Image (tube, rainbow, N blue to C red):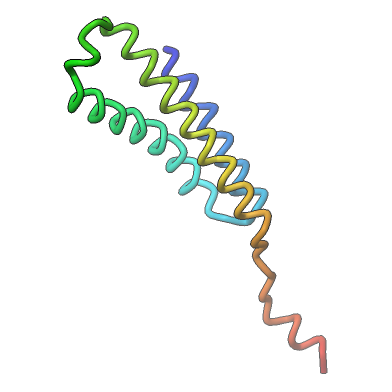
Length: 102
């Protein structure tokens, strides 16, 4: 249940960010959720490769560490995109603008 809440709010925040900056809303909404899970998988691979150091933790603790890692990483990517997109605004290239110059 907790994962569904994270998915909803992450997807919604990426969706709104893309809408504010005239990007593909659904693409970035879905990519926000994909970032969350991809970062959890990345942490799982790192822990799997160094399993001898993590043997003292139980599965519940590792799940919470994975959720935190995915959440913090997704928030970091969100702020990086927000900074990058606010710097590089899309200019309206409507063809009617050129007709007004004549």
